[in-house]
Length: 134
Length: 134
DNA sequence: CTCCGTGCAAATACTTTGCAAAGCG
DNA sequence: CGCTTTGCAAAGTATTTGCACGGAG
Image 1 (tube, rainbow over the protein chains, first blue to last red):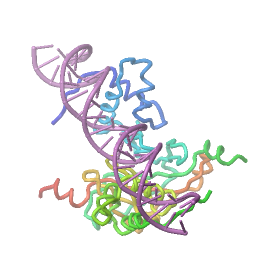
Image 2 (image 1 turned 90 degrees about the horizontal axis):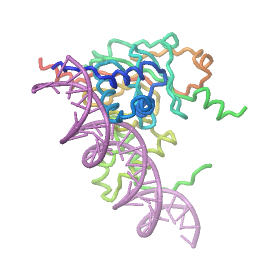
Image 3 (image 1 turned 180 degrees about the horizontal axis):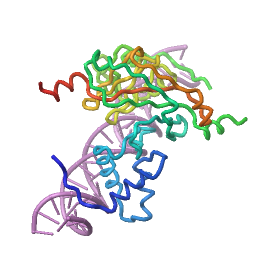
Image 4 (image 1 turned 30 degrees about the horizontal axis):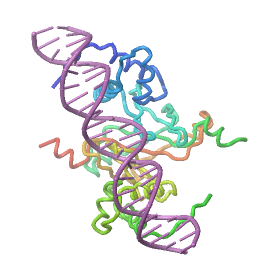
């Protein structure tokens, strides 16, 4: 069930665009960002590739923020902070979070746990300033 | 800026539908569930009310699973398990999870943290059985 | 009577998909 | 040349919204 995969300059560019930013972009952002250099790039291609990268584990999904899926090129498990005002997503190094998970969960619920996601919600520094004049 | 609010039988029914289940329903589910008793209920009304409840803090959003927002009538902070195969969402009592959050996060990043969400991902017991014949 | 709440249908917003043409090996 | 990848546009899904009417106070 392995899939043969040809080289594609566009695919490489898409993956690279995500890997080289920390803003946790949307499909649209990737499209807009690459458009100048790849004038004939189409949004469908971006979606197709993102979805494949996600499947292959090359990138992960942060989840849906304001109706748009946000991706992350950093596949090492880490924590996110999501601003409820502007929707920006920022990484929180694990040193700040310690999660103790009891292994009994799987036993108790007869489930298989693959991963754990932690996300903080609140206001980012920019929005804090904006909402708190002084 | 307070909003005047009249009584509405339908609104009450919608809130009640969510409060009385643990399946973390979608808007569509609420609609389908109430339809028999409220034949002239419309999906738009369900969406409008859910969004208002969420704003008022009467319910919370678990996030988007397979493109659909999932709601939770239990507003006390707690943890969720989301099945990556069938999308079911189940509650995990906090006794199983202990999250230590360093207050320095806010300091360090100049952000305001309102809440923390923890979610587990994996396979639920039903899907486990299905995928693991023996 | 005066607003609030709703049905209905149209409009949005994001994402997926079919198909024929272009690209890689 | 055979199979993969893409552009384009159409289709699909979930959610939001405008408007006129029915309901609560």
